[in-house]
Amino acid sequence: MSHDAKIRLEEVEKRYLGTKTPAVASLSLEVKEGEILVLVGPSGCGKSTTLRLINRMIEPTGGRIILDDEDVTKVNPDALRRRIGYVIQQIGLFPHQTIAQNIATVPKMLGWDKARIGERVDELLSVVGLDPETYRDRYPKELSGGQAQRVGVARALGADPEIMLMDEPFGAIDPITRDRLQNEFLRVQETLRKTIVFVTHDVDEAIKMGDRIAILGDQSHIRQIDTPERILAFPVDDFVADFIGSGSTLKGLHFEVVDDNVDLDPYPTMTVGDDPAEALERAHAVHATWVLVLDDEQRPLRWVSTEELGQGTPVTAESGTEVLAKVQLGATLFEALEQMLISEAAVAVVVREDGSYYGVVRLTYLNQQIRRARLEAREHYERMEASS
Amino acid sequence: MDGILSWFDYISGRPDEILEETWAHALIVLTAILAAAVFSVLLGILVQRRPVLRAAALSITGIFLTIPSLALFAIFIPIVGVGNRPAIYALFLYSLLPILRNTVTGLDAVPPAVVESARGMGMGPLRQLLQVRLPLAWPIMMTGIRIATLMTVGIAAIAVLVGGDGLGSYIQGGLTRLGLPNSLESVWTGTVFTVLLGLVLDIVLAAVQRATTSRGQRI
Image 1 (spheres, rainbow over the protein chains, first blue to last red):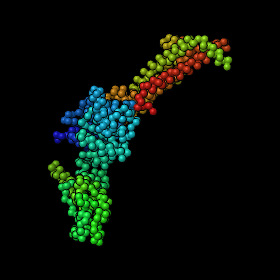
Image 2 (cartoon, each protein chain N blue to C red):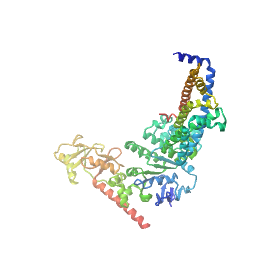
Image 3 (cartoon, one colour):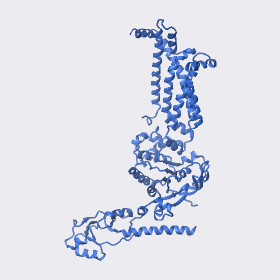
């Protein structure tokens, strides 16, 4: 039992009358304060049921639910739900109420005074990126799907709950808007630091949104629960591997970054005006077929092939081809890979914030990083097994 | 042409009397509708999510509608005596089905996601009903009330046969004196003012419906 667990499920079970097998069987789970835990699994695995057990929209038939060390398994469910933000895929805004009235639902029930509610509504609209002046007095039917879900999130945040439950909140929204809402939500979460349980059936969304991911099988059995990078690097069994699907290595690249404490491979460079013969020599020394031309301020400018250098003509700012594939320090390896694929020399040029040359990322570097991540994940699981 | 002129003569000769009967007619209808609305809405709330009770309530109120109106009015005389009362009771029974059915349909039409989110925010059953389900079902319920009103305005003309007031007295009076002077004029007066009353009541109720429906729900 760790002390930072905000939500703790202890052997929670849901068995419907007249069914042999429970819908959720003896589930124990901890959600840490301030994290997003994503429940992901195939449809029918009980992930939504599990989520709804936490605010007792579905009453558990066994086990205990503990919030902040307080057993809430038997407390008044309405009082419990007012402490927990709840967002569902269909949003369920009240069509007969304005946006402001919708957002004010829980604060009103908690007896906040009018002025405080008004301020809170405006604040929340700004938080979710809607102009209070424009949207306060509109009705839900006047909103697009994306705007409605922003309001849904604002309403769930109404009385500033410490815990949020989100059931496929972006599931019914077009891919482009969904991506934007996900990013905005992550940015809001950075400052709000709510404890969030998030249900999705989409692995990519789980990887993007989750600080940790719980992959659920039948009856909400936890097949693996860990950070996305470790699950991608080391799926514990075939079920998990199948579920995260092909391309998990590529997805893992999202979690590795090019930072300034890594040693990047040396690459032959020259400055405009340097002697081509000298540069050619440097290139041959490392068996490179391209030389990177920098400007006076060390900014990558052009790629020049050794062939072109061999002709002995002076190198200018117009020689060779433009350097298109650049990433900044701190970029993910996924971005580096993308740049690498379009690069003339099959490498991604890494630049500092001021644009000056730092090094290059090659495929071998990605390969090393991936294998290191896998090894670390495997060792982590071996240690866990050894200690249990 | 002569007929219309003589009809105008007939009504312009007794405007106060006609208005009085129209008002009496309206009062019979509105009393029955008001009682039926309160009863049916409460009953509807009670049975909407209980399939057996719901089917029973809908069939019983449906059966009321099939009882011939003349008989239904008369049935109440031994119980409540003659006058407006048996008429009001009969119209009450007729109004139950349209209002009950629309109440149930209106509550059915509340999107489940809206109720789910209300419950998820910690609204108890009563709060869900008063703040979410009833307001959302209201336009459909109100339509039921309007249908019941239009329906009973016509039937209420029979009240005169059980000793009640209303525009039926012109129709009945005319029919019993058929062939004598002013008999047809009298029938037409009863009929035309019943229709006019129906239109006016519907316009008033439509205005009430509009005023009591949130802008967010109007189509």
